Image (cartoon, rainbow, N blue to C red; front, top):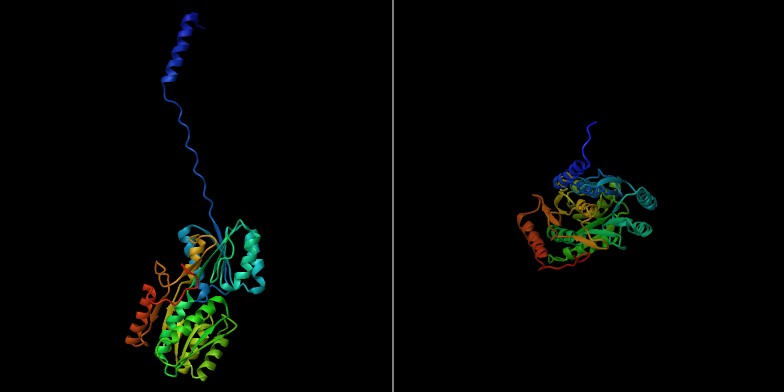
Length: 332
């Protein structure tokens, strides 16, 4: 092996060190971006998600949240009173981040489980937030029923109109208040009946109630029902009286009876909660001034004369402008 003098060897080592110092330094790898975990959202429904009403529209809002907010979803349908606590606790134990109850009838059970799991987030529709880890959205049944009452009063010939509810809940009370205020606006001495059916989905029972009310001379029927609306509207259709739908254009259920429908979005209520758009501990109303086309509005059919449509639309615009104030379930 060829040997170098020590002085030469030292010079070569020094040169290598200098060249190494002048060369490019090693580039440090950038820190890995934090992996954002997908939120898991579970919704609990009191009826079936194919009811073409409260539950189906709520489910559609859940699916929209999955598509637009990137959450992972699960749901339970037809969850009754004696099952509520178990279902909520199961979702909590399974690690769901957000648990939503679709309906005011779940308020007490959700409050209980929210207090048991303070690190989870809970959402309630048609009720009010009662804990700091809960949010709520509430559709203005007061405004919807008020518009329906105005229309009913203008269309009645017997001066008796009726409002049928599934159960007496706070939202139902708001609806009754709005209905009675609306019916009183048209200058006629009109009787405004309200009755609770005891069921949201019993079609036969709703039809029977409708026939009873019609026999008592009620000639305009309105409701706060889920699937049972088909029974009430069929009674109006068969007996030749008017009916007003809810949530969507309901004219397919009674083409000769439906004079209009009050529109409001149960889907928007769940969507806002699933996407965490509602501040925790707060209750947010969905009403005539809610942006994005998801608030309260009114739809008419050709069975309603143009002049009456205009008169009801004028009332709607007064609600929007604030000129007319009938109160809200909660202040926005």
